[in-house]
Length: 401
Ligand code: CTP
Image (tube, rainbow, N blue to C red; front, side, top):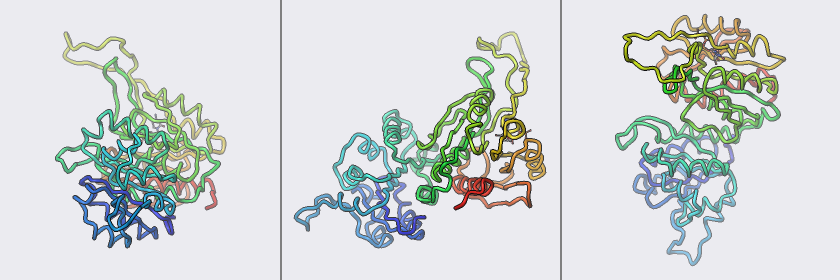
């Protein structure tokens, strides 16, 4: 899908620039050609010979080169490209893009670029979370630029948290998904993602560790293949793909209501949310106080099982895919869920697999369907796992590629 595509790779001056050569290699391996545009500061982290050798191209660095009388390279290179990828994109460069500052090779190229732009931010957590950077990122998303990450993890500055550039493979996967065939155009898919929070009192809730990453990755892959996607999400701290319609919910009851409303209009549903099975039977309007008591019992009542309801009562020809998160008798329990909830496919996650499940950027999945043996996939990025789930959905929908 990237074969023959011409990609401008913008590199700005952050420590993650040391990974940019790998992005060039991966793009070239997929058959794309790469034109690097970088800031002067990027060259403090990666060298020109490396970038030029791997891209097999000269690097565009200087708007006013000494050996030429005039230069409009920032315009001409944009004419000859299919997409622009900025990785890493520092807080400074994101700020320039968002506010229309064009004062070097990278920012002038961005301003002149009228085709898809992918931005992979990388910076310290405190910078990433600063209201100004968040505002700028939101503005770029609203302008339909495509954000990739950032992920969470250890940062070069010694901090840990959000701000780490997505891995080169994930970045290249996102571009590939974008250029993949629009096999799901005309289809509408409901996706649930994230945890649900069940309120105990105005300040406390019962929740779980779901990050929403798997469901959000599925929504994004579906959208990249041309599906209309409605993403019903519990509370998460990640951004949804701008191509997706996001319905934000908090509790299982709210998620249930939203799904019942959307499902009849959909061709399929992929239920990746970690829905709380129970909610407190009584919500206290006032904060519960600890005085005069040494223990506290909270009575819980059952939440509706959204997947089971869609699969066994509401389904009118739609394909329904569920998830199963298990710690023991994994395949057997997944099969039970497949049958009890009348799903067409269960995507099994085992918490016993290192790197799988909540919070991780990777997942190792097993597909359990009605026809044959469970299919186990190796540990991979959640974007890659999402592509496998969407491939399986396409097969169930009999989509022609
Ligand atoms: N699910 C749902 N509504 C619920 C509970 C689960 O829609 N109230 C969906 C999840 O989105 C997932 C599947 O059912 O697709 C399985 O969820 P999981 O938590 O693994 O299983 P449960 O059915 O909750 O059973 P248990 O917790 O006992 O394993």
